[in-house]
Length: 567
Image 1 (cartoon, rainbow, N blue to C red):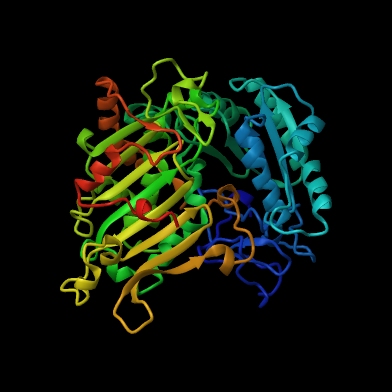
Image 2 (cartoon, helix red, strand yellow):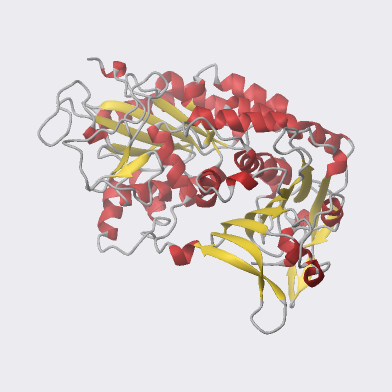
């Protein structure tokens, strides 16, 4: 049987021998994966883009041609994955991608046969790449004795190819080196584009023509931003599809790989106590809050071209909103989930300028220390009016959410670092204890909070009686703090998403029609802000943001949940 004709039914597990009763869920593995007794993550289900879907972490367990050797490995030599990080010398590659790949290797979640290549314009030897990578690798998951051995083994699988991003010659040389490493095995190739978006198409054109796998799959992970508006995003998609099928494009939003975002659908769909409440009948408003306690710090040149709405709100927060608000999908299959997300996005009203507040941080002195303004960043153009803060009220015009305000807030140089979802429920009708509660909104409103970062937690604010002879009510929290409940460190979002991409699991990646629907919401207001040159409201570095955000919330009889508590 030809390797490319192999297909597996969803739900199929690929054991080397008889089913092993010791196979069990593993902290690193998604619902589609189990962790085998030998320590390797195995994919429970998939088929992918017409090519055989072989789990990236179970290559030894799959029969390629119907014959299997005694140790479980295919006689033809099995399969291999080659991961090429394009833009290998950049910060994202050094700080996130290579460490994530090492963490997967450290946890035995990569296949037995894999190779990592760095590709960039910088001149560098294999040894220089390894030295650069080694500075950011850590055995942070636990303190095993074999940490240094695993690091050495991983670095031996890392190589480098220098070349221009629009050079077919450079990628042809990469292809030659990849074929040397893949000899005798089914070659699968993953390209991670850790580069500016203006050279995505050049790289895809060159790599797809000269460095695609001849018999296995070839996939490209594309980092945001995906354009600046509907028009540029559509043009980028059309250009990529000249050389790739949609199934080969993995648009990554790393927030979708965060543990609490992954847990959002589990919390809702597997707990009867929450699902009946998930509608306009019980929920008064939903808040999606993102804040950083630092400014652009030398990245102002890049940031100034996009601003906070494009950088955070249109992708991270909107994707979380779609997951939060979607209807129950038919199954956990990627397309079923993404279909429901698209329905939510298409049901949302286009943003009006009246429902948006923008701000920009200014210089501030506190405790004898001076903090610079955004325009003090030497990489920021003089007189820039690019927002570093934005708040918006969006609405979903469907039966479940009609009239419920979804409030988004994102900003830099604020008083704290946080990302959270806050669900404020309606007041209890005819509350027997209204005299005890009075005008205290915290006691009048139950609130469910999912803290995505830092210190991941889920907590529910409830009212209860303070012990004693009197009748005094107190607002308390039922708190699930992940660090106390789960002792092992939570994997980084990039680890999960890289593993998903290798396995062809697409539910946490963005489909092209999702992208179109998302941009349709924000493009009109972005154009209006820029055409009118709306000046952002200034707020001090380290503050809670511009006052206008509080007026925006008050328009809908809402108070920001992070104001009353910093928990």
